[in-house]
Length: 456
Image 1 (tube, rainbow, N blue to C red):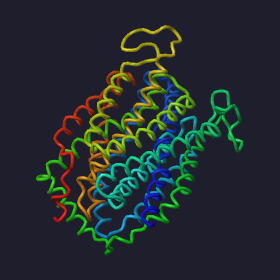
Image 2 (spheres, rainbow, N blue to C red):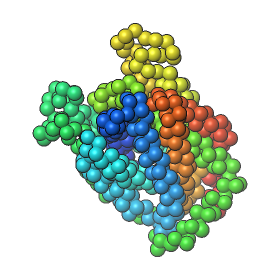
Image 3 (cartoon, rainbow, N blue to C red):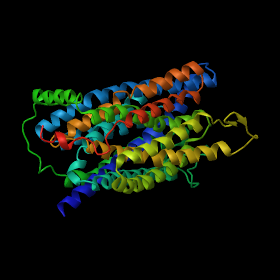
Image 4 (cartoon, rainbow, N blue to C red):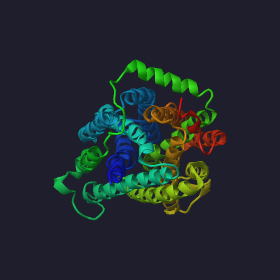
């Protein structure tokens, strides 16, 4: 019964934190920031295309810096946590960062006078969400054994995405105003929120913070660390372990290639998540409500496919599941690059055609669904490369592999956007990142290499 409560608490932590990614990173705050920045730059005299490019570049540069901070700190902090046998205090601290960042975004100015503050507030919460997520991932090996890890990983992601869907539905129906000042169900935003100053959209950050507070309580009550040996945290011991794990990569061929592979394909996936809503805003000229509806479909797809992916993972193993999902995401990326609101693969569409919207909705479902599968099965594959007693350290390395090149997708998008002057063509580098990751993944052993190193 105790283990069942721990598993439920771990699932609920995904539920508690996922809305930061769903609402802030992808579907509500990021497009709001992009639209605010575009209007601000146009008021300075830039053309629409130039303003679009400037807004996307600003967002890309911020994520580049944050990605480097997360990637470099994760393995060091993970090693310190493992040396002390404690993860929960760290997770608590990072959760507080998520909450603080969420509350701070309320003070965003819809006129764009404090764009840098808006970015800083978002980034503080994002750093907290990402690092907490890495530490929570390291708890997965404690929750099950063997093939059941895949099902647990998939169910955890599915739970998180369901939380994301429900939170997105709540803010769209009750808070966020459309152009007519009403929410999607035709009512005024609750609490007297003013549509003219975007109060409904700005309230999303505090809403995410309160959501995290409420739904993380069971996790902190149930996910005890009674089974872990506790010692005084030692930076020197942690760094010795970290150096040893990095040195071991020379002989751990499968883990080495897996971490290298995941650097590229997870960076590409994060690029799709991060710039999907911005793409819809800048290229297809969607409203926040349209993007939110798109997000609901994508999140529902992610929840369903993550759960199904966990079942396939349990029976087939994670590697073939990851490969199949990446192939789908490459196809989707190619479609997106060749889609505008007036053309599809260079073919001019009839005026007022709804085909671009329909295609992008379908792409959104594919990104959500197969992106969820990639994350879930990759987490399982990492467990197969994780040594007992060094889970947080090695998941920190996994976090580093996902963030060491986290600057790459935003940077390449920034460069491509600047060179082409097109927000649409700016996302084309993601295709190459997926392909590189797929090639490197072929050198990864399906069963990992943790067993032979468990005693070292």
